[in-house]
Image (tube, rainbow over all chains, first blue to last red; front, side):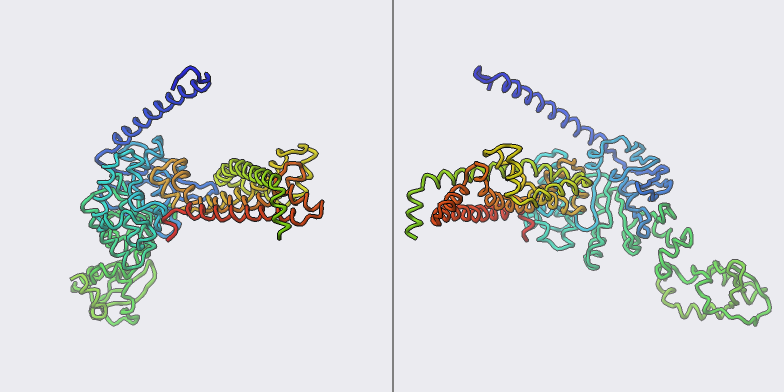
Amino acid sequence: MYDNNQPILTKLFLRKYLILRIYFYKTGMSNKIDIRSYKGVDAVIRFDRVTKQFVDGTKALKNVSVTIPTGKLTVIIGPSGCGKTTLMKMINRLEDSTSGDILIDEKSIRNRDEVELRRSIGYVIQRIGLFPHMTIAKNVALVPTLLGWTAEKTHHRVNELMNMVGLDPDIYINRFPLELSGGQQQRVGVVRALAGDPNIVLMDEPFSALDPISREQLQEELKNLQLQIHKTIVFVTHDMDEALKIADHMIVMRAGGIEQTGSPNEIIHKPANDFVRQFIGLDRINRQRSFGQRELSELSAYFFQANTGQQIVSVKDSVDVSAAIELLGQPNTDVLAVYHDEEFIGYVNQSGLLKAALAMGEGVSAND
Amino acid sequence: MTDFLDTLQSRSDLIQQAFFEHIYLSFVALAIGVVISLPLGILIARYRKFAEPVIGITAVFQTIPSLALFGFLVPLMGIGSNTALIALIIYALLPILRNTYTGITSVDSSIIEAGRGMGMTKTQVLKQIEFPLALPFIMAGIRTATVLTVGIATLATFVGAGGLGDVIYRGLQSYNNSLVLAGALPVALLAIAFDLILKFVEKKATPKGMKI
């Protein structure tokens, strides 16, 4: 290489080139070590007074503080434009906060290298997002390749994951995404997000583009998968049925703020306010509630306007049926006067409640 | 017909030389055109606010009639093959530039976001996603530019750069139809041949998964 006939510049160039390569090789190594040391066992994500204002002035998030628990499937739900996707994209810094901080295991991600951070977090996007020019194997192996895993380890991981979601590796890994059905493609999408063995997986309305049957299948599969892998999954959706079906924990958002957090059960049985109640929908609440948990306001069809009783007790329409029955059972009460705020709505007595119970028989049996 | 064959035989030296000059001009112009407009196309796809003006400028060049462009360049550059090359490069720019830009910007943004979200660097996204997916567009642009350049190179004769235009021009001046044909026919064949070859390359450049 260094024979004397070579001009001096060529020699210099060759030498420099070698030095550069060694340098890059070394920095590459140190990156890999960093990634492992960042992976704690836990993966709690905490938003601390996070505000996001876009360049055009719209505020997507207003002073949001919330914690996403580790090892659970947390669903962020809200109407479109409520900032749920923005909130999620802040976790892997596809969006940066205007103010406030986001912490993973109490370490701020503000100063972490974006690329390194993203490689340690799985990401499944809306619609498919598979690379159409790469085979399934290459798609799934993307993050392991970026992380510099050996070919053998990567291959092993790809096969393991494909089997996990019921796609035979021998059949599928050499196919291209467009040769697969929508449901199969999104299975691969999920698998690809898990390939680098991240502790956190972000899913941005992953099943919204699928037909209803595949969607239900994948929801079921995701739930079962989570039982095996226990990742901290952040799942964004606007579909309440989907949320209630898969969530361990829910965050309900509206207009850049958080309305309520809690388990699906808590959200359904104790909606924090009218918005949450409305957003869940009366039907869904009723499906989950026994007749006794319903509020009097839902039974206005069984109210009467002319007073027939003697002993009247005034109640608010937010009182539930079991409390109303309790009241009517007392000796000095035979009619309730129901008020919404200060406004009188109507009278109700025991027979009215019985009629309502008969008419809403479905609601009663659903919870028995 | 026999006239034509006679001409081919008797002028074979001239035709052969012109043929190679023609190929030389077309190819060098094309190569430099690619070297300029491919990175430029990628760059304006990155910084989109520059896209309009840059493509606009090349489009203005494109609208100048080729003979006029050669005419403009002569007072500036003198005559010779360099002048011809510059004119040809200018014509090759637009198709390649525009197709590179279109190709890269038409890559589905959700695919790019998936790449970024999984931790690919900008360079990796460009090399592994945007470029391969834009390649069929880019090849189509190069193909258009090639056919265009081979055709326009015929005019290089007017700035003394040779090429098959020489043969045609000589034929025209001496009212020798056979000689005109002996120049025109190879140009046409050359253009068709390149087009076919590049069509094949374009097909090959389409990523396998995209053909389904």
